[in-house]
Length: 194
Image (cartoon, rainbow, N blue to C red; front, side, top):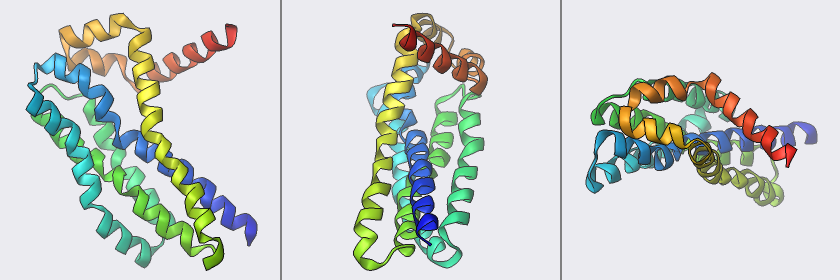
C-alpha cells in the first residue's frame, strides 16, 4: 500500500507541475504577443488574467468530480482537455483568438483542487499534511515556465524580433513542440559544455 501511496503523490506532483506550467504560460508568452498584436495595457492584463480566472472558477466543479469519479481520471481528462487549446495558441492571429485559448488553457489551474483531494484520500489523517505538502511543490511549475520560456526567448534574440515583426505565423513555425524540444536540448548541451 505504501508504494501505491507515494506513487500517487509523485505522479500527482508531476502532473500538477505541468499543469501550473501551462496555466501560467500567458504571463511569459503574453509579452511577445502584446508586441506582435500591439496590445494596450488593459488588453494585456485581460489576456494574462483569462487563464487565472478560468482556473479559479473551475476548481469547485473539479473538486466535486474528483470526489465522485476519482483523481486519476479527472487529472487525465483535465490534462487532455488542455492539449488542443495549447496547440491552438500557435494558430492565433487576433486578440480574441488568444483570449479564447487562454480561457480553455486556464482549466489547468484547477489541477490544485484535483491533486489535493486525490492525494489526501490515499493517506491516513496524520500523514495527509506531508503528502499534500509534497504535492504542493508542483506550484513551482509557474516558475519553471518563467525560466524555460524566458530562457528560450533570451537565448534567441532573432525569435523575439520575429515575434514582434510577424506575430503568430512565426510563433506557429518556431514554437512547434518539435522545435521547442530541440531548443531545450541545445540549451542543456550548452550548459553541460561549460
